[in-house]
Amino acid sequence: MLKKFVSYYKNHLGLFIFDTIAALIMSGLNLVFPRVLQEYIDNFIPNKELTLIFGVGAVMILLYLLRLGCSYFINYYGHVMGTRIERDMRIDLFKKLQTLDSDYFDDHKTGSIMTYIVGHLRDISEMSHHAPENIFVSVVMIIGSFLILINTHVMFTVIVFIFVGLLFIFSASRRKKMMAASRKTRATHEEVNSEVENSVGGIRLTKAFTNEDHELKKFTRATNKYQLSFDHFYKQMGIFSSGTGFFIDLLYVTALVTGGYYIYLGEITIGEYSAFFFYITFLVQPVRTLIQTMEQVQKGWSGYEKFYSIMTKEPKIRSKENAIELKNPKGIIEFNDVTFAYESSQTDVLKNFNVTIRPGKKVALVGATGVGKSTVSKLIPRFYDVDSGTITVDGVNVKDYDLYSLRSQIGHVQQDVYIFFGTIKDNILYGRPEATFDEVVAAAKNANIHEFILSLDAGYNTLVGERGVKLSGGQKQRVSIARVFLKNPPVLILDEATSSLDNVTEHLIQKALDELSEGRTTLVIAHRLSTISNADEILVLTESGISERGKHQELIDQDGYYKSLYTASLKL
Image (cartoon, rainbow, N blue to C red; front, top):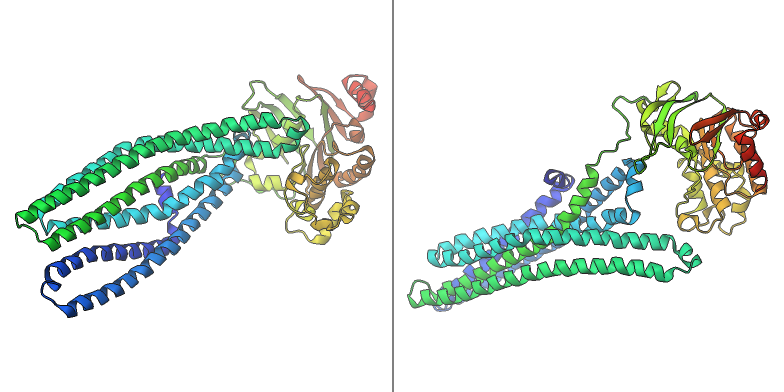
């Protein structure tokens, strides 16, 4: 885990080195002043060496100007380095999330994932900048002070460092409790974000059901839990901070008494005594910094653990080594004894399922809700993998194809249409981002939405709102269909593609879909059976599997389950 964290400094090694050098210079300059003070008290002032008094003072001003420059570099470029590391981690995390299986997003809340990407990485950024720098500076200050003090008076130095050691022992003993409390605050932070994401995303439903009070109670419970977790964290931090403060106070009292005693014995001078106090102050400063850094590391590292857990998660569905590129497929799709169940379910959605879709043919799946129609459409592009059996495209197992190339050859219009925040043009371009505007317009015309777009004040540059809230259900559906027209894939999957359209619009767009399907392998998940009357084959699914199959008129003539479904749909 640590090795992975350190690797993020590789691309910013120059900044890190210069930041470390600047910190080293600052540490060295900090160690100079007490020794200069000692010389002033013991030599320059008693001997009335006016030239040295002003000359050394002028040198000190120059040194502190150098320190000013180093301080600026650390505070500016050090933070820049931290934000760049944060950027790299955020991009890597987002890239990793793109590779994870659908199961992962089935099991994790959107609000929690957003917290990983935004909140946790901000703390990691602060840690990545401050922790190495603070640790380095503090170690240099402590070792430098120790070497200077030990040459002044051994026993005095030993006594002082005994208390410094006790301070570190106390800090280390509280580390685990601080870490545990920090992890708890992160977990409850994720819960709050999830509640906000759920409530804001469903605000219209909340208003429709007048459940504002219910949502407030849910959010209040999550917020109270969040606040209580911080109560525990701040309790641990209070014990930590007050305990360290007490040891630091003891250190000052010990230095005050011990130094006075050694002056009484004539073993140190007043200048050395004054220098001792300054060095003790410089000892306390890095010790305090190390303690604060430890607190910062607790927060940052607990966030990094979340980051690392995702980065090391391997997707179950991925391209194998030496995967085959799927190019210009003929479009022969075969299901051979396929059995599949979702991880959250103990029941097989499909069992020993067999079907063949010939090139350029249109096959429709119909049946009651829950019999696996949409599942079939998700297995072909490997959104999920089968438990047993095989699915082949052009005679090759889909698991042997490069995943990206497989999905790039499939156009998928889903029942649950997702519209991104942005313009209508941007949403259609999602089908093929490199397409020209003329191609976008052509796709919109084919999807029968061009005239509607032109009626808007901003035309294709009209913002659709979050999740397309400014569009009707039918308009969203037509935008999604325009995407597929733009993608122009050899294999089509239409998962209830016209379910949100009114009868007039459905009739207009059905002709366009038929034209798009011409010469392509097409799988249609049908809700309205009137839209599949021209299918080359209709499969009627039940919980037991395929109960009927044939063309529309053949199934009507059989006077079976399909006919009852069709008759019922005509009454709607």
